[in-house]
Length: 300
Image 1 (tube, helix red, strand yellow):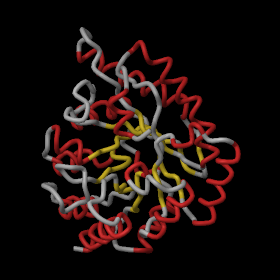
Image 2 (cartoon, one colour; image 1 turned 30 degrees about the vertical axis):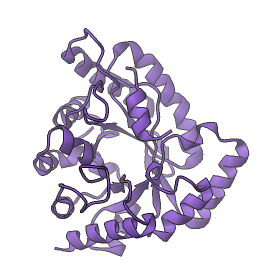
Image 3 (cartoon, helix red, strand yellow; image 1 turned 45 degrees about the vertical axis):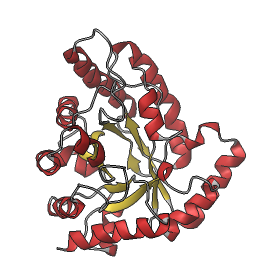
Image 4 (cartoon, rainbow, N blue to C red; image 1 turned 120 degrees about the horizontal axis):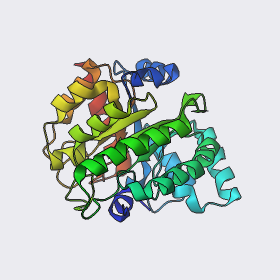
């Protein structure tokens, strides 16, 4: 499964959010560059023909130490878990975020199932030392007013927050990250607007509930990327990077990522910048170049 397939198949916070990010992550990022943020790779986009362990080796070869998952582990055996854990620790890799819950929060009828998904996922996240999970809105419910679905997102996240409140994994607070998806990728998806996403996060008002700002999706949906970032940086728990059109590396399309990286640095964004693009050439070389571009832009 990948996030793109997952988002299409779905049926159906935090003024103090920055305080939750562990100081060691900020320190690690600052040790390597002037940028306050660190880097991750959404694994579904690269090295798909290799074993999981070999994929992690390629991540390190590209210069990264953090990986985001999409439930690749859902069919793992005990041996698979042990092998992946051993390789991760050997390479010094962190699984910083995961995704792939079956149910979303936008349909009130799916709420109990979504909360059950989360309850089921938490022990696996603990096993993986992975402290954050992406939450989806799910699809528009035919005949249901948008305000009803908007409120369902708020109430569902509040219920989910009560499950993770005070919980830590690997020394970090467990975080729930709500994500937008553009209507070209999934014409039925409810939360296509970053502006509405931030409204939901503000209404939930919980430090362990934040927003995953995916610039690729928002450029397609509504644009005006930087202004929304400036207004809502305190609620932003993760950003995803890919260019438009094509979901390829920065520089292949219309998004000015150098300006975005500079703005992230100016705003002292100290969480993850995750590469979620489909490389047009050698993945290791493209990932290295993308990371270097971000670091160079943050120095300006």
